[in-house]
Image 1 (tube, one colour):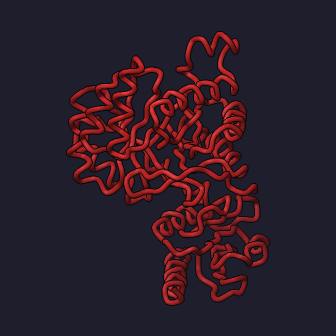
Image 2 (image 1 turned 90 degrees about the vertical axis):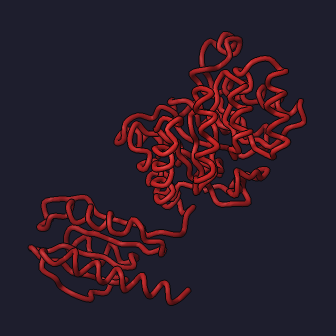
Image 3 (image 1 turned 45 degrees about the vertical axis):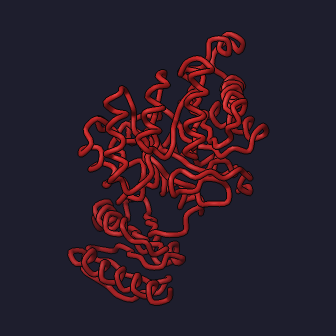
Length: 358
């Protein structure tokens, strides 16, 4: 893995973003922003899942006006997602949002952009320039005969220049497209031009299963190159899945050290317990654990204490029974029906040990 790219630092509310700080995982509500209580309920659920920043669609004046009520009770910073109408950006800023996501080029004349920038500057609110392959400027599309990595970068640099011309540099930027190789190349090119923080993600990635694969490949490749300071895994699914996926990607790359991690083997003809069901139960149980432990669920003695010896604790299935092991050493043999309950007890003991060592 390459060293992380050096960037400027910005603050979205009380959350710092940039290379001096951990990578931030965020999501977006799918509630009607005008429904304050529904939006707050979902924000709290996402926060409990680990979400650090939340973005809300601002579709009209009523949605912009609702932001103040949401902001007053939100446990995490709010970003207002604005398209086309600069007045909504101004209303969102006056409502107290912690960040804006706009395309400066699609919210009107330079005077309108200037009004938004000056208001954001006076409130020390950052702006994310969100370049999207589906809404590139017509002249850029014509010049490049369609959407290209170079075109995405050109659009991003054009929008950055607009803000910088007004003396504004409290910026982060994203270049999003569903074509993963093109997206990766675009960020690589932009990294050579600017030192603003990057928000990364694969837009329109798809439904849960295929979207997870596509996002993991794209986001993981960028992070492995040291690119990315905040991320969203965009899925056509419950937003809570986006948070779980985001942190799993970070853990897989060794970029997040807290929280339990599950490793489990694929099933095969040697498996003689309900490995799939057991792994699902264990995964759900350890989801809320903050201690940096590795938990293994293995299907048979072949893939048991040996292959998973580096796990802090684990199970190796047998014939309607299983072995519980700790750091490769067997500490008990349990019947299949009692495996999960016995394993939970050992996991809890291990977590207590970690807490005592703090």
